[in-house]
Image (cartoon, rainbow, N blue to C red; front, side, top):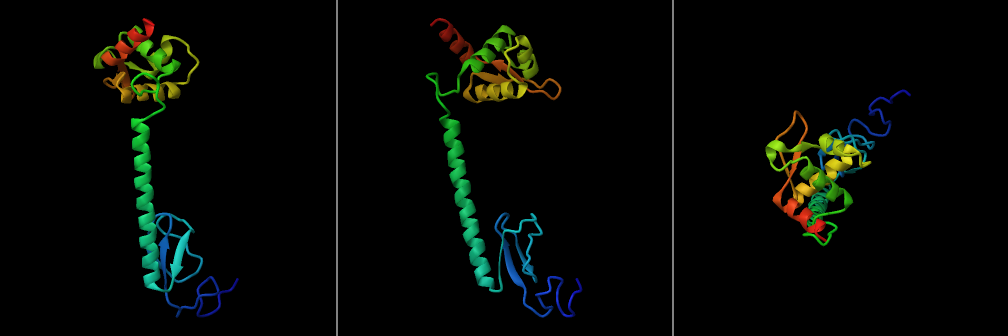
Length: 178
């Protein structure tokens, strides 16, 4: 398609037209554009507010910034709640299920009682075939670390290692005595 003389490639916007004041609704990037087919140069989003009026663009920017801040605060409070109040078992707020008890048992069986004798996820999985993938075991042992039933040891190459804490040993003793 041939471009008309005096027009931008969109065929609608003249070289003499004013600039649009633009605000990306995704990344809050503020920029100018001369065409109506606006794409954010920062993130590539096409969800862009544009207007000739600078005040309207600034209002939109402030509105989006406040909305984003509120969403961030809301999500932070949700994540704090999740960290403080996970799906609780009777035992001190940790997510304890069969896999959690198995992992604690394997750490105890492997005599992983401190940072130097800690076991990697692969070593935990190799104690006994329990049918879980390494990623699932890693997630569960990470939850046990957050709750204080397990601790992190020295790295073994690139792998994190884990050990059972005193709190974890007490929990196992208590459960076994039931």
